[in-house]
Image 1 (tube, rainbow, N blue to C red):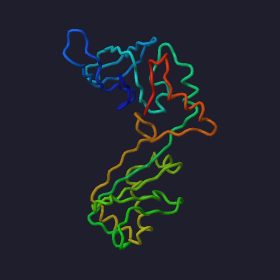
Image 2 (image 1 turned 180 degrees about the vertical axis):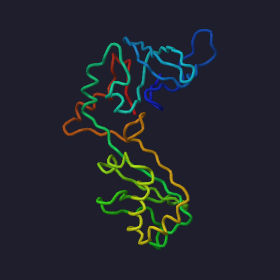
Image 3 (image 1 turned 135 degrees about the vertical axis):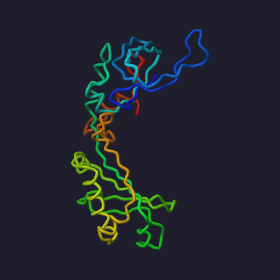
Image 4 (image 1 turned 90 degrees about the horizontal axis):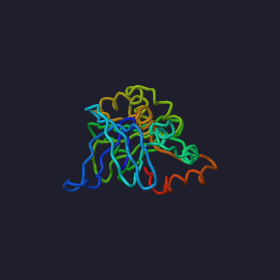
Length: 231
């Protein structure tokens, strides 16, 4: 069995071993995980059906948890009995933030900047969205804008219009085009805010200073080789 999170603390799919009298493997639908009970060699997942609102339970010999770091740190998944060594490992890591926007334009105007195929555009780290890339080797009218670090967290509360405007201001500096021209070229914008998404609360995890030895513990089996963490 494996646990991950399309919403808060949901258990997804996964192919469980066949139960007596059934043909083949079971297919588990989306469920919200309420908690789990384990003993060496056996784990029971207590969950609630996503749309039927009824409680169900699944058993397996092993469990793989791929829940995002902030949810584990917040105790979104209850372990019975607790795993005291898990907290020490989780506290050695932190969640990082990213803002990423994909623009679809009417034309590939950036190809005028170079005779050679253009893959990246880089600006000053003082800019919002300082890094851009094309879809080379595909010549399509898409550009991706990327922002990581403190500025990404700062923008987490911005509207998509505010983020888009900041991105185009940087693109104007990188390409020498006017904002009005860039705005007229935009056909659509695709964006997802992982920092504000309750199922992720960030984009990637990293190890804190002097935390490597504690963080590495999470890659080892827990609960007498019954529970594993990955992601």
